[in-house]
Length: 279
Image 1 (tube, rainbow, N blue to C red):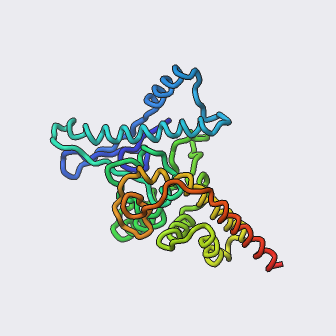
Image 2: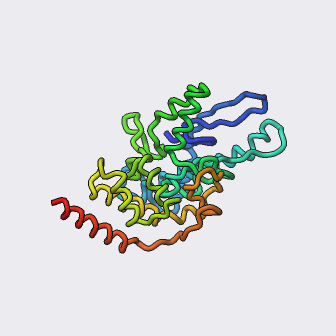
Image 3: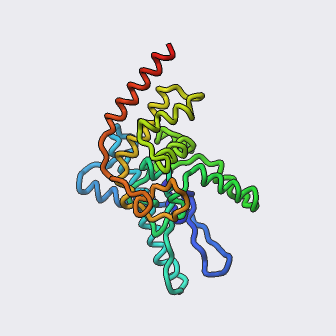
């Protein structure tokens, strides 16, 4: 069952009513919308994509349909919510992509990351969790506990035995804590693949082997390279941290990169030297 999120990465959508201090919460299923779009595609090409397909392009396309419907419905609600209450004006759509997702491109172009403004676009997942912890502990917002303890997921793949089968960290291949460190080495640290690898040896050498650190650096920079183009259409973020990857005004970078083969070769040479020195 597919659900859409209008105001956050949860199962529920919310919008403020026009009565002061009153909110309404809705769970909106979008299965019929997804099915309708797939039927249009089937008419044109004569086949239906499936999550059971061995071709990952089908699986990604099915996920992207759901993700982009979220954006369309978010803007529909923003434009018509006040009309339904016979009030003038309109509502802003808030985006939800954080720094780590943006750096590795773990988002769909023109999905719920696309909005009028992104309040958390320059903050890492780890820092966001810390903010929520403070709100929970200091200000008594107990409802935040379930959000803090939840497993990050895009919620775009079908459930398996009633449980979430898709998690962010498993798909990215890096934890959000690791991405927070890596992101800060990139900026403001100003490090590329090789410099980052050397620094991470000193930071993570007690828990990872040099081969594991090499793999993590490769994963990050491969994802960063192939997905940086998404930053060119990202929602403007409120500038809150110096590690922000906001491409529009705070972090101007190329959106087409080489394959970093030279840097990766130097990293491999360094790994071999370190292994020989330890034998």
